[in-house]
Length: 114
Image (cartoon, rainbow, N blue to C red):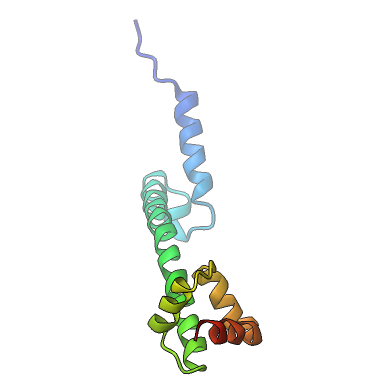
C-alpha cells in the first residue's frame, strides 16, 4: 500500500508561513526554508518583546513621575511612599499621565501627600 503524505495539509502549512513572511527582503520572502527560519525567529522576537514592552512602559512611567515629583521638591521614592501611605489608589500609569498632561492635578496630589 502506498504511503499517504497529505500534500493538501503540507501545502496549507507552507502557504501559512509564506503569507507571514510577506514583506520580508530577498529570499526571506519567497524561499521556503529561509522564510520558515525567518518567521520562527520573528515569532520568538514578538513573544519576547511583548514582555519587554511592559518593562519599558513601567520604566517610562517611573521616569515621568520622578520628573513631576522633583518639580515639587520630592524624589520618586518619597512621593510613592507617601502616596501608598495616604491610601491613594492611583497606579503609575495614571500618575505619569497626570504628571505629563495635567500638571495642576498632579500638583494637587503632591500637596495632599506632603
